[in-house]
Length: 287
Image (cartoon, rainbow, N blue to C red; front, top):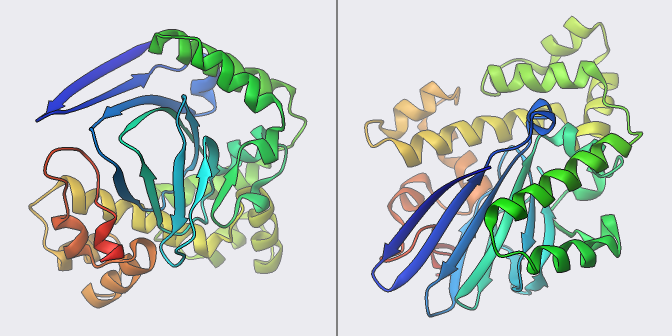
């Protein structure tokens, strides 16, 4: 049920555990993982948007979160980050333990009973969507010490809620999202509408109802996710090459889009690292 990686970076302790979903959840392309960190000091990270809906279940700890254009932070223990989120500053006091769930946007729409548009933009407290059940979920997880048993509970929770949901997922929207992903966001939106036999307006409306953002916005986000992966996992590409590979008109266009999604330039992001722990320091934005 799990694949574990442990790292001791100087005096900081860090652990990442990848859960292995049941066959039922695999059919929904759901994934989840666990994180533990004990660094002996407060931590401030920059978290950039993704092309997935992210659910965080904090275990006995809270995160202070604010968007990069706001100085006011809000405490969260269990929360949802929609696909239309801005770059976020996430802080904790030095010890954090959580489960992270990644969902395709249309799967999140079914799981949260059609609340996709409510998840955009920004962060939503999970209690605002699932109510008092969240307290029980967090209490149960807090009593479990092993990642395997935690993942089993999360797997059961997600499977049950997906089975009980009467929210319809349109196959046309599933297909359109998969086409956008397959093409890295580089496919004309009008072409997708024409293949479906829909008007541009009808396609955009249906897409936003189930995904939470327009097809054009989804394409931009998917393109950024691809560029971010190249930027952070390979040192062999120049920025101009990443721009070309990911379908940006030129390096200037890439830099502008990257700044929109991260709050900084690709060069600054690529070079920013903590000296002893993982992640991107939030002070590259605050500073």
